[in-house]
Image (tube, rainbow, N blue to C red; front, side, top):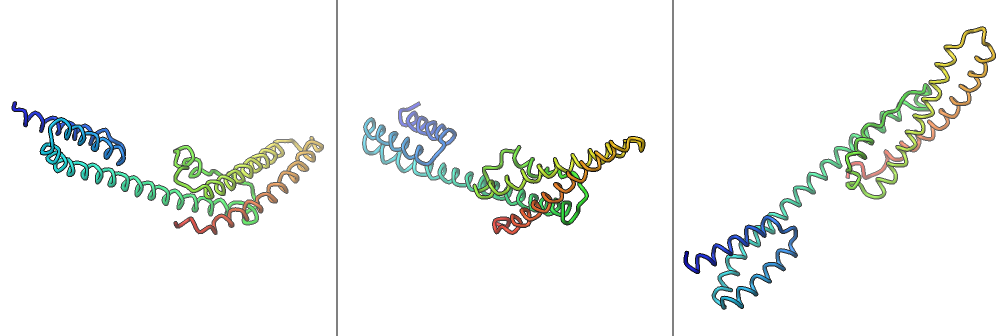
Length: 205
């Protein structure tokens, strides 16, 4: 193989390696500059000009590829964010319909969409404000669910006590009233918090 062919083959290998391994525009430009200086020093002006011309197309191709990849990732993240926000909004609307004052009967609340969102590691897609407000309201939901569970347990226990254990029945009835009042009061507060967060402008952004 002649010397010019060897040079051309070496340059092609360098371009291929850089296209595969470089991770940013600045690194591409820095490496290109260093290679250009080396070629100019070793092979002279003509080789330098030839390298710059052929290498320019490679640089543009790499940078265009980076730009397209980043754009695709940004679009993908934006779609995922919008989809999850839509699901969370529906979930919060549904939960609000199950709690006081809309419904005073304790029911289990399962914030599956929020739990999936958190476990998937997609919190990074939300703003600090969104994370703060959504985390707060979902913590409130889980506390209210916990209270609902205790009310249901007391009801079930009361229903299993025979009539001859009147004192035990009365004790459970008092406990039920205490827990139910707390559930209703906190359920109303939660309903207000959900209504407030559903009014945020960033749901459709």
